[in-house]
Length: 151
Image 1 (cartoon, one colour):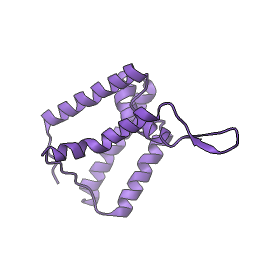
Image 2 (image 1 turned 90 degrees about the vertical axis):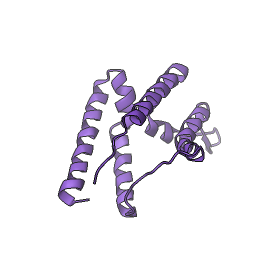
Image 3 (image 1 turned 45 degrees about the vertical axis):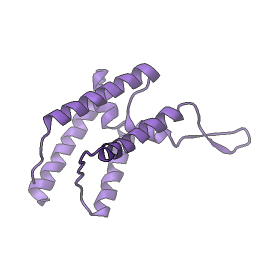
């Protein structure tokens, strides 16, 4: 299995991610950690009568942020760009991987975007340790899958 490296597309993507995180921080004072933004969409509060309600205030930009993540590839495909995503068809493997990523985001108090992009740029030691951990584990998993298991 080979992986094609696309330096210009990767550079452009990295610049756009960096720009968007700076804009979010300057405009809202918030860190662009995807797992935190997504999970806060589902937070609820409690009314005086004990009924649960959706917490308001920041839901607008959070919904826009998540919608942008979902809709950006669709807009590019409608515009004629060919986007190819390759992943396993094994739903049990996808479910286990998703659960592990979710657990890691909660356990690590953030995800790759929160720690790796925003935390490192703020010189956070906790984010440095988290980023070193998930990058090392990711490299190990790729090695095992490609060279030991033979995927």
